[in-house]
Length: 258
Image 1 (cartoon, helix red, strand yellow):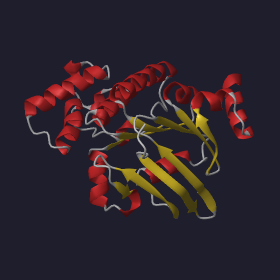
Image 2 (cartoon, one colour; image 1 turned 135 degrees about the horizontal axis):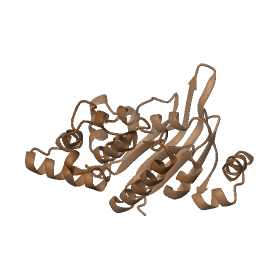
Image 3 (cartoon, helix red, strand yellow; image 1 turned 180 degrees about the vertical axis):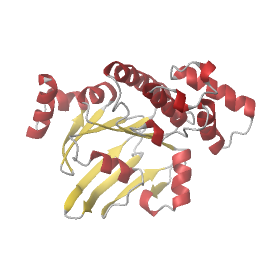
Image 4 (tube, one colour; image 1 turned 90 degrees about the vertical axis):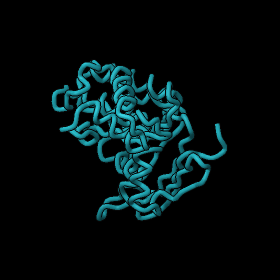
């Protein structure tokens, strides 16, 4: 591993009125590493993801990102335009609801092609060929390249969103409950697909999930959140097989009892 983390946060604090959404949260993620943030609804995990990705500004603390040139940038000191450029190139975001990450009136190929054009691709034939290949990679029939996402099932929409996000091979991908709301059988195949693509591309991923099984399958490290705090963290298997904090013990026990 490199000596400097890809993304590093220190002392993040954020309140919504009197409610502490984040309370002294620190973390780091290294190139090629998958880190899962788990916890029950209201634990602060999605708020943390939004702060780390620059979508929310914290009341306290800092988030630093190391770019491809080795320079370190303060995420919340970037201008809006710089952050948008980062999201189109070096970063990606997979939303729980694929409609938030797709243009529903644009064809499947157009959704993938737009992201390529955002990083400078201009040759129509090359863009279409790349989009076709990515539809194959996410198990969508390339014959449907001109169909719109509105014509796809929820699982297909999520796979298309993943293709759109990963086509530019970002260095860091934020995933917010990527299998939420899908049937169990669809979830299982999607998790396998994400695992294969992440390993193949060597991506760093910050994954928010309430699904312990998904975290075990995908993540190298695990952070457990409760009421805006990280109560336990460590290698995924260690945390799940030998949880130390009583809240983590309850989370793991609830999965075993289900």
